[in-house]
Length: 212
Image (cartoon, rainbow, N blue to C red; front, side, top):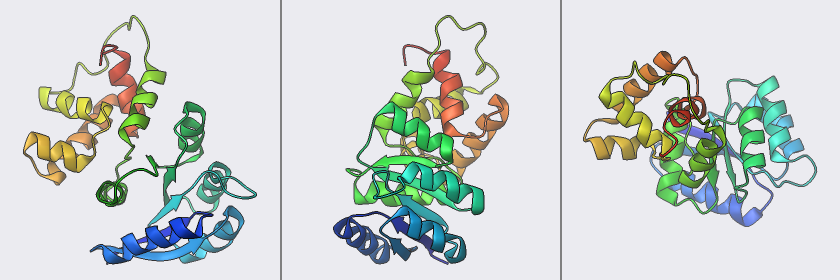
């Protein structure tokens, strides 16, 4: 079954471009398009997409509030932000509202499709610049004890790549392992650090590696 993706974006041109990218890519289908948050909230729970691509700057209700309300009524739907905004406030508001990942609109076609696959596999992709902002905001001086000390050398290496914003596929390529192997490492990292998201894992790691 293809990955079913819905688009919430006020620009008709952007909606058309994203829809074309999805429908021309193997393993994807553009399920629906919505020009505003209100229409999306009314339709998406019944449409049941696997993933929603969500803009922030929408007419009426903004994308962050749409994420918050959508996760309340349809918690299983994964939401990937796709926006021009890269300020810390919007990033954290979106993640706190329930977004799974955060990409900038200048993300390439290949990177977008990789990110959607990663979300579908349980990951939380972020554009590299976004990941760095998240990391920097969580840095803490003079840590008492490194929470990553129980990680294996390879797990620490994978976590370092996550902290630098690499996608799972890019990590797999750099380490010459399979995508599934990277996913297994990440699951173990989450378990050992007692976290549920990339943001929390990176925060713990970088909090004890301030020079990264």
